[in-house]
Image (cartoon, rainbow, N blue to C red):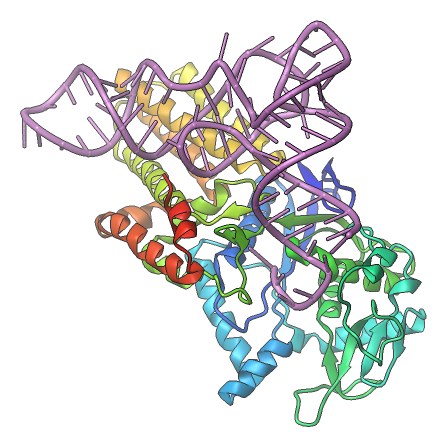
Length: 449
RNA sequence: GGCGGCAUAGCCAAGUGGUAAGGCAAGGGUCUGCAAAACCCUCAUACCCCGGUUCGAAUCCGGGUGCUGCCUCCA
């Protein structure tokens, strides 16, 4: 398989650390609010990667974390008068439900920051021992300028960043670029003991600690949304390799594109968010998933109502096609035609090579459509043999499994009610988008088509 | 201000040197008691603009224009 590596900016062949095995880590969510369609995109993309790798014969270990302790969680919990870990646990539960609805398989390991404190402390200790970090008045900081490769992933130099815009002024730092590994607790804050004082981890260190803990140095793929390239992943590389003394942290870096609402990136701070939960009220999870897979994973995806309509129609076609195959397995006892077998195997090989090419889902989906059309055409010309429909069904289902679009029977079961909602859904979501964006021109552009 | 990305039909979208995949929508047809589904046909002399390289460019180079991401928490 070939993947686009952010660090080298090239599409390269994936050569695993250990033959036949892939170790991958993807930055998960900070559960302080409901997940939106952007979070869903990232989860679906890496779920697809994981499914494809498994399909291609690799033994995959997939780790994805929960940042269940951070400033926003603490703030929100305080506002609501509950414990921070209770708040994050609640949103983790919601997230799991949302992901299940999108047919995202649970990662093999889902570490939480609150359960990884010792690993984090150990890692910080190694970084300090290697003289890449220092203890200050309000925490432990990583000394960015001591790490010469800093900036390679995001393609910027430390000097550019300094001359650049606003860098937080903090007297406790030796250099404005330095970032916190450990933040000392204020009285009353949730905290853990450490050799440097009571406190909690900084944001970046957790992912280094958890990925290294579960996958070891030099694991294969580290992924996340592209907005994490800087500073999060840049910092991860710096602190990890500062601790690893020359060993490589990660072999390949992958980043998925953002979901935009209108022209802008969807984000909680901009308030232009469409949550997975809201969408699930209107669309089947499988339709949402198909919508997300219609675009290459690296490109920005502009949220579009008409796009959901198209995905709905397309998923309908897939589900109907599978039902058709299932309904006609007893068609005849004739032997399978050679050409028909070629049709099936040819489809699978095209499908496979499309996904092997940096997860080209657009092309993979084009093959799926072509396959459906050809099988249907054959069926309109002559009766299919039972062995042929069985073969076509097996072929089709294996492709849908890789895409995570295999919950067709569930779709068909609820078909009539879903279709009744289809038109209505477009209107309802358009209204919600209007509220989210608050601009008529943007809304109409989202409705185009 | 610094560093990136993108620009393909009404809409979504693939395609990194060899003459424009696929889907949605639309129009026409076959089938059908009607409808739906299914099947067939049509639908970009053309890839933001201007130059250049080449036998040949959506694809490479230069210059524009437009949109956008990161530089702050972020998927």
